[in-house]
Length: 119
Image (tube, rainbow, N blue to C red; front, side, top):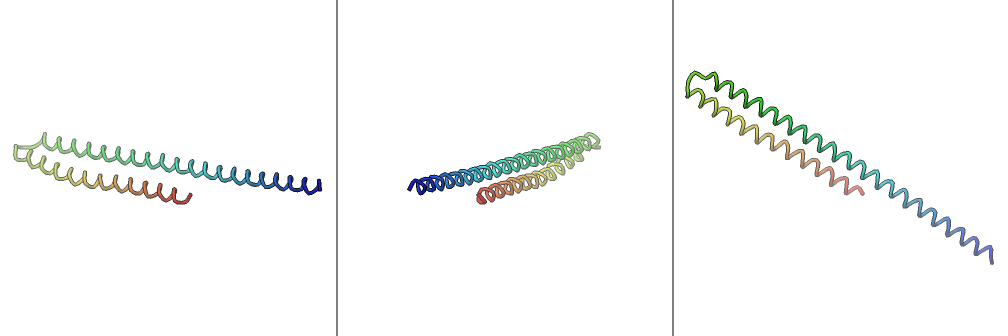
């Protein structure tokens, strides 16, 4: 009878150890997923920041080019034409840049939601 009791205790201890190991594995997997997700978010933030800097740099180059052209204009009508061209081009550039940033944010959000769904 004591042997049955010892066997039951050993079985319970093995079951508890197995459950503990399984919980530990699940926790490690969860931590790994969190780490990977954090790395992806950091990379996404870096990509977004770099894209914004690239856009600001391009906008600044275009603005200076327009100012140089206006400074070399022969008359007021040429200055007005240069300004109108710049504003038209900048408007198109702003729309394109906003679209690019919006697509990046949407893609990052979609990726994050997919990762959450994998859990």
